[in-house]
Image (cartoon, rainbow, N blue to C red; front, side):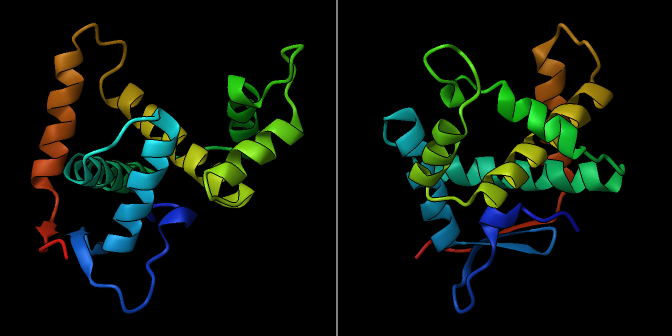
Length: 158
């Protein structure tokens, strides 16, 4: 079973708002994701939209695991080096900018790097399934078919 990454650790005693392929997403996790997205975008994020995103992410990570998709530490490092927010005034990677940005998100470096690894797995999965498709609809349809086939149980949001 794919994990949602280190940042989605399930706090004990919190009921799930959704269960995806047996993995629970709690209200606390949803609130954390909404808060992070709001901080990142600077605009309010609808919890239902975020919940749909978390469901999609969980389903895609499960499929990537099923297919044996892995991402190396080197690939994660390359991705981190390419993020402009982590660059200094001269355009070079800055560990200080990196650590400060991740801390502002309320994450540890390990949690953030696992999230990046998961993002790269999802990118790899999409590229394998719908390679170089000029038709974005094909990607959307493929993702929706995976979600429709997944075991997803929504619970009332407290």
